[in-house]
Structures are given as structure tokens and as C-alpha cells.
Image (tube, rainbow, N blue to C red; front, side, top):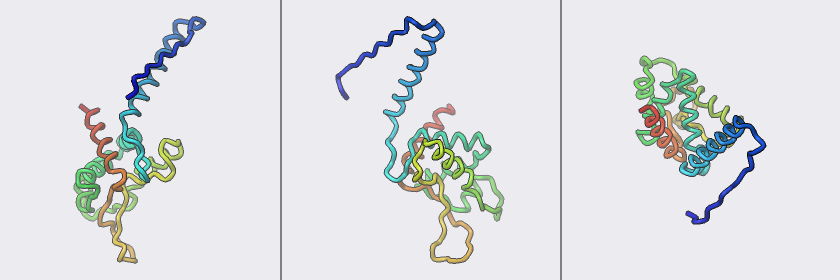
Length: 167
């Protein structure tokens, strides 16, 4: 870390008290944002996610009524990034044999919204992918779902932060 200290002075004498308070608040918010970025892991090569972007996605899933997707992502992260179909049923609270078609759609919708808002790059990987057996050419039920290895550490950190914010 550098020992150089920089002081910035801004002449706000021409502004009202209310405007000076608003300027001070904005500066403080910006400094907090910068401090958060400094402690966050950088974008993972090929993964395209930051801890705060994953946290935002997880929070949005909960707000949108898909908390079960967050729980599936949590269990997959705890299991090295992979979760079986049977575990998805158990964790998501589905009955055996219930259709999982479209299970990752809400997760991918949020990813696309973050990409459109340029909060993550266009090539950001899916937070949860459906894995199929490549040796089976015809229709098959997804045997498992996975979190890409490149973003698994970031997902774990985001989940940890999400847990801490609940406390």
C-alpha cells in the first residue's frame, strides 16, 4: 500500500446548507463504494462475476420469489459446485418427478438483465447450468446442475456475505 496521501479540497461556499449535505453524502457513498470494490475479488477470467454482482443476483432471486433457486445454488456451492436432480427436488421442495424444465430460467433472466445494464460482461457464465449426459442424443432429464468452476469462489463469497447480512 502506498504511503502517499492525497487531499482533495472542494469549494462549496456558493452552495446552500442542504446542497452541501447532499454533496457530503454523495462523496461518502462513493468512498464506501470504492472501499467495497477494493476488498472484492477481481473478475475471474472467463467467469465475469464479482461478489457484489452475485449478491445482487441472489437477492433479486429472493425478491422475485425464487428463494429455492438460491438454496439450490447454496447446496451446489457446498458440494463443490454440483447438485444432483434428486437434491434439487429435496432442496427446492419439489415432489418426485415434478418437471424441472425451465428451472434455471429465472437465474438466467437476472444474468441477462445484469448484462444489459453492463454490470457484468456479455460473456459472464451462468450462475447455475443444466448438465446433460453428452452420450445421450435424445431427450433426457437433467441428471445434475452445476456452478462453473471459474466462478465458484465468487459464488461462495457472495453466499457467505448474504448469510452475514441476515444476522
